[in-house]
Image (cartoon, rainbow, N blue to C red; front, side):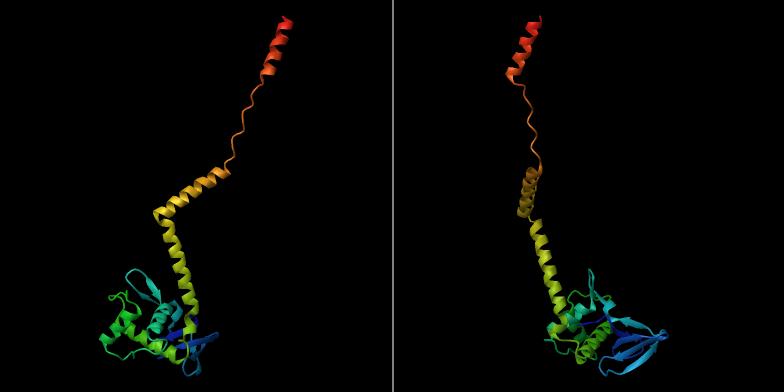
Length: 196
């Protein structure tokens, strides 16, 4: 799902796709009706690709939250944004269990449900929409598993012994010291006697 061109405009209901830029603003297209209009540069625009939701330890991109909702709902629509506060909180618990309850307001959850349903209606929410994200997650999990294996005591021991072996192979053996042969010594002595 391509979110980088999907925008929300303050004061306008729905979601829009950026079509092109003009000198004085932008041409946008309503994602559900496909109707094109122009807006001025003074419009307050939010790119969905730049929006994230607060958790207790990090900010999760909106794209990932949409993916969680899609999996939870079998890639179909979700609850209405007009649902009760209790229902919206329960919906949020499933979409992002670690969300920060102090910083994510009911109004944010309403917007999330509304945007998800708009994108679903416009054909943006399908199992294929999130393939790249799933592949990225698998790769991250593999990397994490590899890191975990490398930090275990056995892995550290193996790494240390491997380092020693490598060091032993790369170090050049010291050159043998040359020894004077006994024949050479006797020759020197015999020549000294002759001179004396």
